[in-house]
Every structure is written in C-alpha cells, then in structure tokens.
Image 1: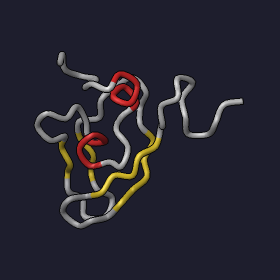
Image 2: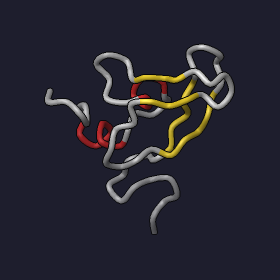
Image 3: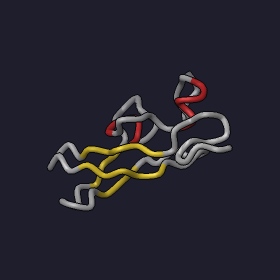
Length: 80
C-alpha cells in the first residue's frame, strides 16, 4: 500500500520551504521529475530563487531536497 506523501520509488513529495526574508514556512508538494527554480513567499511576496549550485528552491530553502536529488543523491538539473 502506498504511503501518503511518498512516491513509488521512496522519495518524499513534500518539503517545508522557509523564506529567508520573513521566516515564513510553507509545506509544498514537490514535482517528481522537474525543478522549481522560483517560488513566491505567500506571506511577504519575496520571490525565492534557487541558490547557485542548487537545482531548485526545495534544495535551497526546504527541509527536504527535491525527489530527483533524494533518489540519485546529485543535482536533478545539472551534470555533476
């Protein structure tokens, strides 16, 4: 039986993003096969951008890295 919030390959599908400007946290669902480069904080409207060297905002500001990184232990968007 599938576990809620976990993909078939065992990757967690939710991450809590923390805005570096206001400290607001949001729990968001992560795509399994794509990078999310930008996210707008729902509290202060700051546009978060993935930090240099990170593939997405989840890897930069989340408490759980994106599913492709969880599965492969390397960036999902760049050749390492």
